[in-house]
Image 1 (cartoon, rainbow, N blue to C red):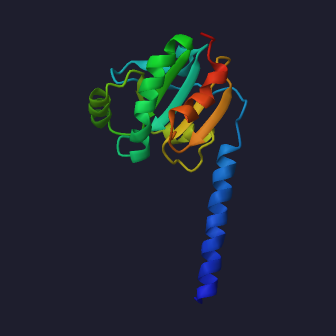
Image 2: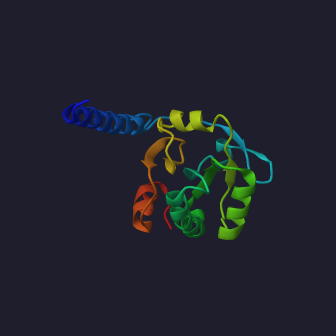
Image 3: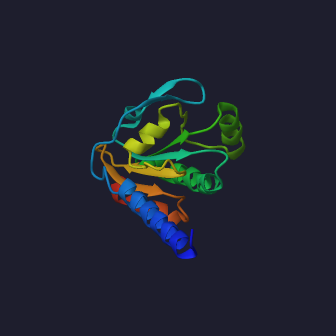
Length: 171
């Protein structure tokens, strides 16, 4: 192939990837959150409905994902400081149980961690992440509506709080 053909194909691939990324995040906004059942680290089945009436930050992550690990301290801090205002962080780990348990204990994670299964990638797709990238976070308002999605880590406390504060109870 000639260099121009290769460059054109590469450019087309980048455009297709960007369009797919945009489309993956442009659906489901304002729609009802999708319920599911997954086990927590103690093996108890949990449902999204367990946290009805709260502002839910639903975070898909893995221990092997550096951006995922980078934002966990933010989630720990937000859970500690805003739980009384109706915030509930819920992590869904796409990883091996032993790695998740060890990491959760080491980090002193103070919010529920659920263990993803073979259907978790499909669940992420139904929430709008069709490319399956991590971290992926969905914010659900107290009425159970999807109000925000983020593919990539939150890079600051302000960024995370700007996304959830409009839905929290007043002090």
